[in-house]
Amino acid sequence: MSIVSASPRELAINGGMPVRSSFLPYGHQSIDETDIQAVVDVLRSDWLTTGPKVGEFEEAFAGRVGAAHAVSFSSGTAALHGAAFAAGLKAGDEAITTPMTFAATANCVLYQGAKPVFADVSWDTLNIDPEQLAGKISSKTRAVLPVDYAGHPADLGTILALAKERGLVVIEDACHALGAEYRGRPVGSIADMTVFSFHPVKHITTGEGGMVSTNDPKLAEALRRFRNHGISTDARQRQSAGQWHYEMVALGFNYRLPDFACALGISQLTKLDSNLARRREIAAQYAAAFRDVPVVVPPAIRADVLPAWHLYPIRLNLGQLTADRGTIFRALRAENIGVNVHYIPVHLHPYYREQFGYKGGEFPVAEDAYSRLISLPMFHGMIDQDVVDVISAVKKVTGFYSR
Ligand SMILES: Cc1ncc(COP(=O)(O)O)c(C=O)c1O
Image 1 (cartoon, rainbow, N blue to C red):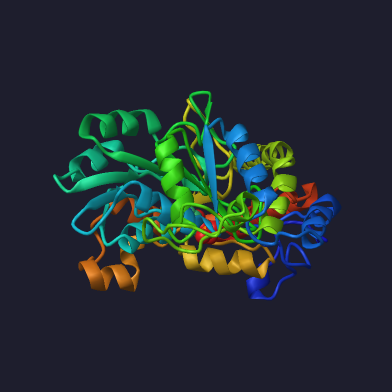
Image 2: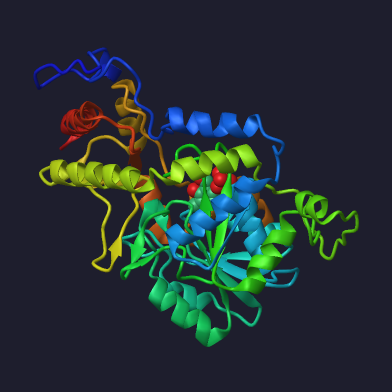
């Protein structure tokens, strides 16, 4: 519900009336009756863990992203770990990624005993800068992990060419980018392995959940084993073959996505196109509204991509504002707009500072962006009034603090 009053209005943080009476989160799942029924049907079936819905979901997903194989995992983080394993990362190796991401992208390298190395981002997209990446390649580098920040595909053509030349595996972290396209091709069909997340704020959800897509059957097999303790068959395969024998051939984990979660995934996947369309509509409305707000820099879109809009991160022109990002953030929250910040650059987290001696200043583009970033609400369930409220609150707050 919105309570829009005439401008100029007193900020809610200063005791004024908020733009809306109820809190609008930055992201939220949409679950309908068909989703619920799909889960209930599986709950009444014989298989709660790896049953028929797992393969069905994987096949439908692979088809949607244009890949030959898709392997489900219990989370995007587990899927990243699987990809780091399948890429053969081990102690003594290095893998290059971006600091402008969720910690899981770099952590998966550490899980394998290898070292994450960061390369700074490009100013426009905040995706890994291929030139910076090239400068970080050493004799120990085995893999690169570009991230499709906010749903805008990384510079995959340049990165893949570089990786091919230097013999590196490309693990694309597309946890933000299900449904995005790069040069007319769907994300998921391009890199050696592409990783997705089905966390509730993403384009489709299974509660927790993740997927790796690949065109390489050997990588797919390695991923399947890794998520099942490193064992070559699953319980259902053994039951139908009347077999008790199995072999553990690698050190794996239990990273399986349950059958009822896969049933939810299948049902959610049928709504992906409409979810993407709604997100693109919201992004276009934001971009149009902020054209005449000079203190707000909307996210860039390169000519050769179709973004998936997981996030809508604006950057503030702090030089034209009398307040810092923290004050603007709190003022927007007081207006009941659930803004967020993506991301604290990974190398600035205490764990990475302590383990690797980062002090700040190493990645100036990512660090400068961090000081200006605010993610506005962006999810496919937003109604028109929600979008109007966000725009109105951003104009109200930035107008108040503009020089
Ligand atoms: C870029 C990125 N990578 C990895 C992950 C991890 O995914 P999950 O939360 O499904 O483990 C996330 C989660 O939000 C993410 O944003």
